[in-house]
Amino acid sequence: MAKEELKLRALVAPTETVIVSAYDGSGKADACTLAFYMVSSHVPPCVTVAINATQKRKTLQSILQSKAFVLGFPGADQVSEADYLGSETGYSADKLKNVGFTVSEACTVHAPIINELRLSLECELVHNVTVGSHMQLTGQVKRILADESILNDKARVLLDKLNPLIYDEEQGQYLTIGKKAGDAFRAGLEMKKAFRAESGGR
Ligand SMILES: Cc1cc2nc3c(=O)[nH]c(=O)nc-3n(C[C@H](O)[C@H](O)[C@H](O)COP(=O)(O)O)c2cc1C
Image (cartoon, rainbow, N blue to C red):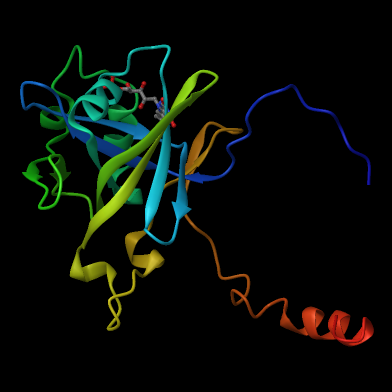
């Protein structure tokens, strides 16, 4: 298959769009939209986001000050709100008020939960490191709050109900998740068995 060498860049297609929120020094809730997000540990549960440190993002300053943040997941029905929170700075607008989002104090950390988001992770800042233009902030998840409407009877999140926003940087658009492609840790089992048998179980 013919390959083409692409212009050097950090490809982020696709990633889940999240909204991080934190209190500034005066107690005002800041929030901004991020695509640089990953799960970084199962035990203890941790997530890591990366925020541009060269451009003095207000939410970044608030996270560093308060040592806490809430990570929320907007749904596809909240695409305009998420896009606005990522296109305007809290230095020049009361962004949360403008989009009609309300906040409540998180239970485990000093950070604001955006009530309108259907899934929120309360996080304590446990580590930060700057790599290139961005500061990576790792938060230990202290509490998870989910709307009943997105849960199954085992309290597991139903992605089709959450309907998360996928950010496609290559095409400059938001997508929704697609159809199931296979069962995790099962789709490759036959291959695993076959190759193990071939190599004598090693
Ligand atoms: C879809 C989307 C994804 C974004 N992802 C990131 C990101 O991962 N890191 C980052 O530093 N900024 C990201 N931004 C930009 C910030 O959200 C934006 O600069 C915001 O205005 C910062 O607001 P603040 O100054 O109130 O914190 C993203 C924006 C959008 C719309």
